[in-house]
Length: 97
Image (cartoon, rainbow, N blue to C red; front, side):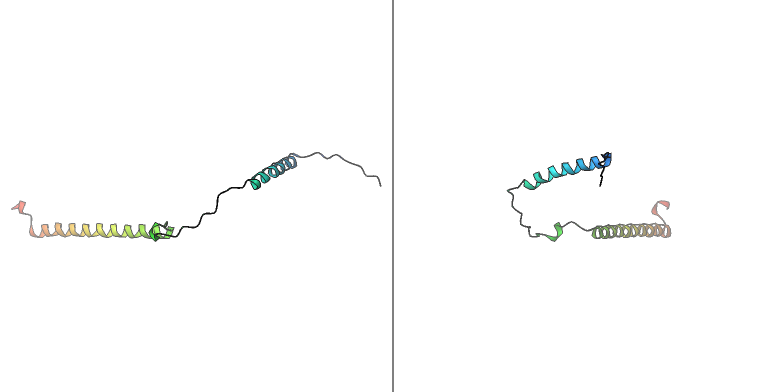
């Protein structure tokens, strides 16, 4: 029934964990004890659906729509320019006469 008492060395890891627990033990009561007099805010009713932020899908769809419109506009402008030049070649310009 002889029990030998051995003094164990404390490793750095266990010392730091003990220090962290002690700091946490001191910090928690102060945050729990601080009470604010502020009351909870009532949620505001949504006024306009357009004011809500757009989702990623909606933004992407808008970009695609704008891109298609620009592309169609450019194609129409090129087609019109080609037709005008073709007409000038067929009828001949007045400057050559």
